[in-house]
Length: 446
Image (cartoon, rainbow, N blue to C red; front, side):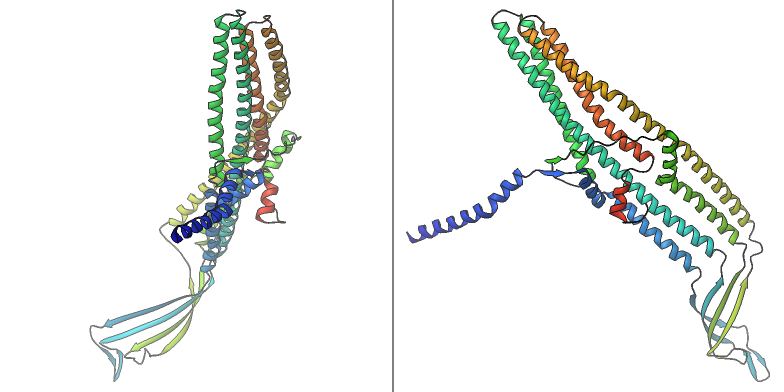
């Protein structure tokens, strides 16, 4: 009896703990749906996306190049040891000039004074580091644009699902009315079958759009690095129009686009590569301090002895390799200049394409809104006429199809227009620029 009472008491304690701590957590987790704003999605991508992290590592690697450039002007030290056995001992009277066997060791420290390759190496390293930073910014901008595109895809998919649900309700109401009129002999079986086809088509479209929504959410989740399936995204404000002419947009693109800056730096790097070859013609000046140990020592080779040497090395002939290197680097420079000019032309086309796409959407959106409004009015009129026998089921199906098509096209175009505006900003290098400035290095120009 006592054991049973104790067991019941323990069970009561366990249930109380579960009720207080465990079950509320489960209910909270199930009922709490995460809301994600566009800027929060940017923040998540900035912290978790692999491409961004890789580009940051490249910036860190490029910082090592300046240190490597300075290393050519840093002192070097080496120790050399050798054993020498002569054919025979050489003497001058009673003094030994070269013993039969001898151990020698040298400790040398060489300090470059003038190294022609230092300055082009340093400039190349600085340009390469700047190029890596610009490439990192470009990578961040590209990833954030992917996030924005996926974000608007989710919004578009959600609205398409709602549109399809509304169409399904209309189709089900049509089927209900058709069955009721068929039962009283006002319409034939064909009207019912056609209404059932409308319902089936709406259900099929709902399945398709639900899957489209799932894929869009999965894509966004992958880009921002979250594993949560059920989340809600907040619709951002409508983007303003970009009221600037083509020349002004191209001018901004050539000023702000990261790939254009990278291309210009590529030309500068190619110039420094050519200067590096020129530096091979320069003399090398250095000072060498040497410490010698000799066993046994001789009258011309003292043990525990040091000396300082000022060394000048002048390259005269190297089999013509410098000439061929110079010609090769000149051709590489010409290629870099051509690639830079080619990119400039591509940028102009990209800006024009983005601008015309925006203009196309702006010119069609008002018409699509009017089309949806008229299609809704047309459907309601025809459906009311169908109820009283003044319109056929074919008229209702046709009106419903046109209404669904108009709504779908309006939704698709509305969100595609927002993405087109973002793409236009990206084509001129200004997409997410303020966000990046605030997040990456406050108060500095990006």
